[in-house]
Length: 169
Image (tube, rainbow, N blue to C red):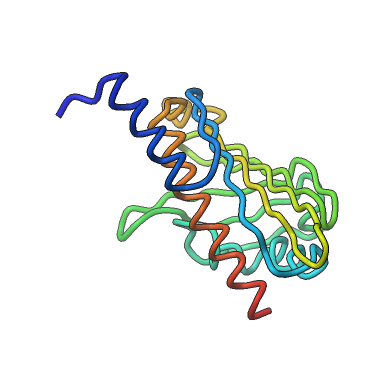
């Protein structure tokens, strides 16, 4: 099956409606989800390095969490993949502002991905926004409308998992 520009554009438009996020032709995906919890309840779950694999799609259990996580420069170490195909990966904090923002660099042998998670309080609720895009290495090949749709689909699933964890503590 040939996927031309018109079909990629239609996929992107359809995915945008389905996912409720923002996709762009350069592979950036922005998704958001309301949490029925204040940022002070969302933040501890978001930055609990040992629980990263519970909400981040594709991540196997975390092997190690650097001392000081989530301070800038600290990393999580884990495997990512499906079935027997796994690669060693790590997530490093670029910037962190408690209860407001977590800026991450995910890097491994295939390249890097940039993830920015923002928390915005409104009453007793929190709007969590996740921006994710390929940033280097072979993963840069995902800077496409189809890549953007894939990152958005993954992001929506991650936010739903994270929200479920904030409900259970």
